[in-house]
Image 1 (tube, rainbow, N blue to C red):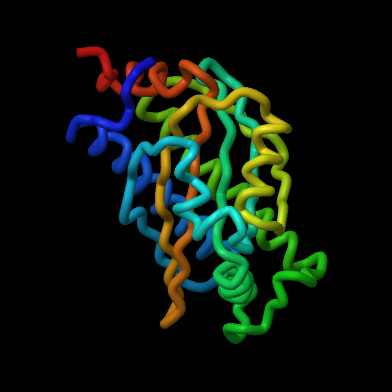
Image 2: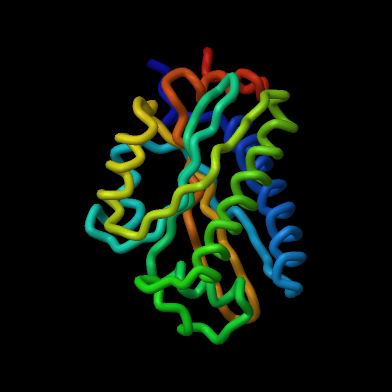
Amino acid sequence: MEDFTQLSGLQIDALREIGNIGAGNAATALAQMVQAKIDMSVPRVSILPFTEVADLLGGADAHVVGIYFNVSGPAPNSILFILSAQKAGLLVDMLLLRSSGTTDINNLDEIEMSAMMELGNILSATYLNAMSMFTQLKFVPSVPAMGIDMAGAILDAILAQFGEIADHVLLLETEFTKDEDDVVGHFFLLPEPGSLNIILKALGVNTDG
């Protein structure tokens, strides 16, 4: 089993650059979608054990919104974009150009749900396109699914739906800013066993000594 907890500076830099390019492209796409400037950045990139994901989100009982995809290709994986329910409401308001606090995340209408799903589509497409550009690997995301639940329940559902996931996941912390509103979400790449090593090898920064 490869140890992904001790990545080199070169590996982290390559993954961060993928995140920054994806965020830049996503910000451009979102700006076109809402006809307003939305800044995005990736302040943190890391690889962490899957068992630590729930704690990062505030614990298994934390109320969150998750959008997830199955990704096929030579390095199959799943994608999960997840953020607190409160921040998800702010993000919907941001996307629909409304006053903060307007959206009731527990009672989304069709337009609000479409805004969240479209955000998931944009993020997955831009990040995967950036990954493809760097690795020359092809990634094909499925139609998104969305859940509003406790973090533990959403993670359990992903494991049940997508089957085996490797011990470690790639985290791209994603920050959205519009006017004074600031929203931080977590974009996870959940690789199937062996996929993360394929990605790192394709980047030319594999984990082998």
